[in-house]
Amino acid sequence: MLKMLLLKSLSGEKIERFPVWLMRQAGRYMPQYRELRAKEKDFLSFCKNVELAVKVSLLPLELLDVDAVIIFSDILVPLEPMGINVRFEEGEGPHLEWDGNVKALRKITSKDTEFINEIIREVKRTQDRVPVIGFCGAPWTLFAYAVEGKGKADFKRAKLFMWERREEYLEFLGLLSENLVEYLKGQVKAGADLVQVFDSWLMHMPYEDLKEYAILLKAFFERLKRELGVPVIYFYRGSGEYLKLLRHVPVDAFSVDWTVDMFSWMEKEDMAFQGNMDPSILYCTEDVIQRKVLEFLKRVPRKTKYVFNLGHGLSPDMELKKVKLLVDTVKGYKVG
Image (cartoon, rainbow, N blue to C red; front, side, top):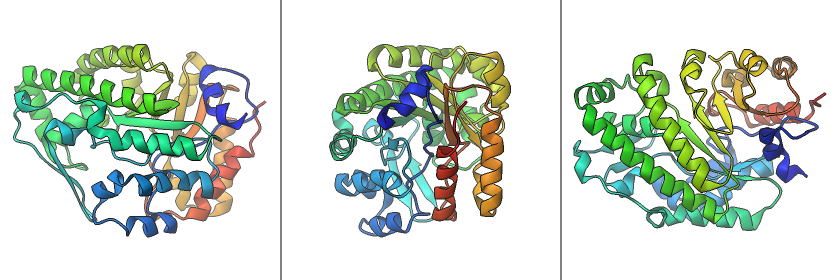
């Protein structure tokens, strides 16, 4: 059954082909997305418009025939009810304002972001072909955004906070962990079949500090596994060296970028993986896309416990027809 394909692969059950979905699979590269986006004044309002968010969430299923729907939202959503001002400037991305007072930050419940749960319920009501993925940002990535005030920086301010205000740093990460558990519990209760945690800025954390963070992550994911009752995927950006410290984190799959030698890890460890093809392949000609995808899939040294995805999200200047070609090529490759 197609709905169960991704879940079957994660659990090691027999599959005929690898499941495929793509990070940022609903986005500006789609004309249909841009048409819907024009209906709201800003990106955050767009995310909070349940009717539009449901339509956007379903676009990849309609246009690409992917094997999962990830709800349309943003990882920064839970920061707003915590007391951090979040806004999006057109063409510039997110801007966050926070005075640095950790004590003033609030605990949240899933009711504080009820629109997310409504999106999931409506997506589930609308389709039952594929699983629905809920998600959140990881503690470090959200901390880095809050302290830095934006993304795509060197995260110097976040590192200085971590080193100079260590107790407050740990307190902030602890509160984030608590809030994210509640946030994801609401999503699962609403119907999410699995969840993904995004640590998009982990590569900015020094390896020595990663040792301490890995301990926190282990406790965080242990609680998620205990309280959610659905598969959990952890996406991080960073090298394979990071995986040496993270490998004991109890998740159902690691989603990795193109800097990780995923195939070697597959050969030596009984770990489920997702990823890790470089999204830049989609700027190639169609024949090169097909060739590279097939070469990639032939290197996967197993017949299950793998989900095809890119090493990061799709970009606005990519072509819809090439994204569809990539998905079709993966779906046409038979396992075994």
